[in-house]
Image (cartoon, rainbow, N blue to C red; front, side):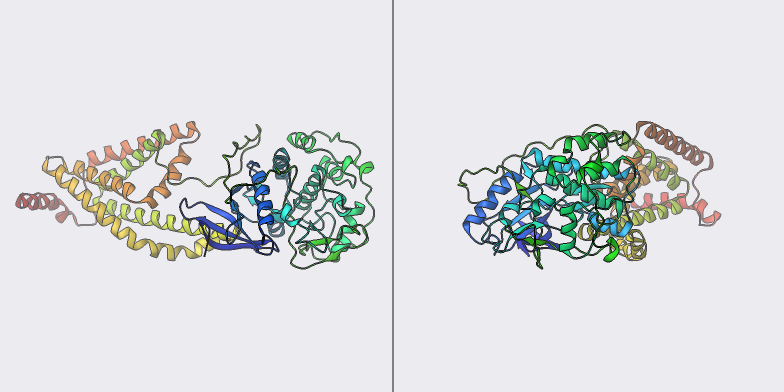
Length: 549
């Protein structure tokens, strides 16, 4: 199925506002998370224009820690919003499967989340739904997702029964009172999400939504298990009064040096922690909390649980109010993404395996090829068998890597990816046979032609075999993308840092020289043929060549 210029690949999630798919652009091949909005949400022109204005504002959010919007069309038959696709599990699933975050990763996760929320605020946007299921883990790096529907969700024509406020346990208490969200509201949600990652359980417990919301209003959080200054920081950020919470800049500054004691005030005086009215163990830790609608006239007294109501993703502060004259969303050139601060590495990116080798990589490849060509010159039959086996294995590894990449794009990283790849390896080896046969025949013909030409020029037999082997490997490299995809990362890993590259080049050159010296001293061995037949083989080759001429 296609939506606009995108081909839908697989379903990632679903909510009351729309369905999210992994999609691929038909021209560029770019993969995105495409949210297809339900028609009852954006069914009229006014709502679509409202969504377009919001998307224009959200387009300004650019950060490595944010899955930013890359495309949108509110006026399409199936209106959609496309954001950068981040492969990986959500923070909720990661904690559920692997347990709490420990060690230095605690501060890294908290810092990245704070930087992502700060990037929203810098663009005049309030996220208002920071929670574990809206954080995708790209390796050890969290990325905030799910933007673009807050103003539409607040449309009174849609939410006739009340206000759509988000997910219990990660909402700021002032929102439950009917107060508009503010940057301090996102600080509260940041603290609740970080506490979940560090504790392995929601800080306001589990159970019925009304009970969880009541604990949020009263500030009854449980941070037992978080040690050191981080506990004081989270307690301060979970204060019931927004004025008592620290700002994001203060939090980010402390997270740069988390070993320094927190100086943001007495957390005990900021938030009074009362005994929980319902024990945290009353429900399983991984129980799913449902979104909730709150009546604006009685937000403090009654909460009604409604099924299939989506959480609010984003709200926009001071969105442009000028009329929109274009019909299709035409994004302006986005500002450059802010550079991460020194000391904090950017999120992990998939290596581009299709790059051609640079000078440093090229020398390593030449040295490896010289070693293999020397083996072929010394033992032709065994060397050719080794080259064919190597091409087969390289193509099989490339096929397995492609399958693993597509699997992770569709389902995220799983702990059993490695064992599954091992179980699948016989099938990948079988799939690589036809392509390997065609490649070896093609490159073998080219190598044989070079060998015959070298023999005509009167080169010694060892030189002829050496030239033919080098030609075979060069042709295999140029003809097969899968060979390059597998060998390329190895050479790049051996080239960085520069000290490692020097050691690799010198070591491989010594081995290549030793193999060449061995061939010159011992000569060509046609093993596994017996000695009598192997001694006559060069003369037979020359006779065949003489007759062909």
